[in-house]
Image: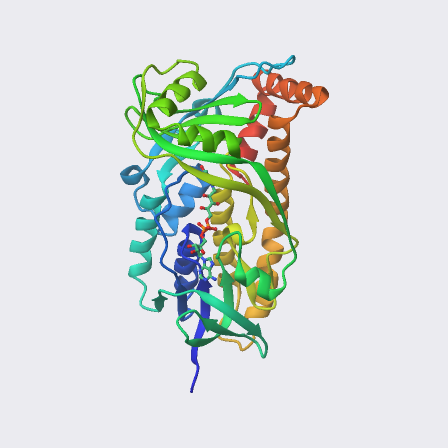
Length: 387
Ligand SMILES: Cc1cc2nc3c(=O)[nH]c(=O)nc-3n(C[C@H](O)[C@H](O)[C@H](O)COP(=O)(O)OP(=O)(O)OC[C@H]3O[C@@H](n4cnc5c(N)ncnc54)[C@H](O)[C@@H]3O)c2cc1C
């Protein structure tokens, strides 16, 4: 039986995979996208201005205002009973001379927009199946698909999430730490709206964050001990609404749940390198961390932007182009992956620290951010992934 051939195969139909499939197909390579059927992604994504600009220029989201909501302020409230507490801190995008820090989007709306961009590309074929396994060899990879088909590709793009089959079978070294914390997400209707402000109440087990979703609607991301979240969820929606009112310090009046609450397990994952031997990793296949400072998909989109740059710099007509391209991609990603991973890890540890000197450092850091303009500017740039 003869084997089908593709210039590139993108594995995974999450947001990173959809964006990567569009970027790879736009390079002109004959591209196959493997997308198994899955449930809709109930999360929302706060995407910083540079990411949103990328979505616009890449044709993925032509009009952010049609599907998202502007994020103009970030308010941090230390809600812990700790000895050393941080001051309440407000960051305003106007202070940085920006119209907004970014936009908040429902992931299902982003997926619809990315799928619309994918539909217009004649050299992109989508197959609704999984990647079962593959072997590398002879300037490419031989793939075995879940539907029984076989496929040979020059370039293989792993966008298959935290448990990436591509990462594992290609032998990329990864470190993963599971956390005892998880994240509970749902949409809330508030009596008093939060406008364009994202409001973070910092509790000892993690932040309770309300993100603007238009009008009186807010998206909740509550990080806490898994068991605490599970028992809160089991208490039913009326009890949850009361609990949310308490956790938001009664600042927004009556609260109602607009959608059911979903819980996501949290872990931290990193790889030593993000590309080699004609295989590249994008999105959570290459990096994952708790949703603190809204970095995950922002970083995933920067992976895709660098993949597009590596494709543009390569001679795709040359046999064996994929190996040097994957090495170029790994070089382009190395500093950003290290810097962002370290930043989120440090932030996560400082938020949960029992250790008094760490609490003092964090409180001191927030005072410094409150009072010292150059530090605030540096924090804006770091949080927004400005390169
Ligand atoms: C609660 C929460 C809130 C978050 N909020 C933000 C935020 O505000 N801002 C932000 O930037 N980030 C945020 N993130 C992170 C962001 O959601 C993720 O980084 C992003 O969605 C990951 O996308 P992905 O495509 O890499 O992975 P996934 O969405 O996990 O997609 C992986 C895909 O691969 C497929 N797959 C798996 N195995 C195979 C296989 N063998 N063959 C084929 N396909 C396969 C799966 O079916 C899936 O479709 C948040 C995360 C959480 C948990």
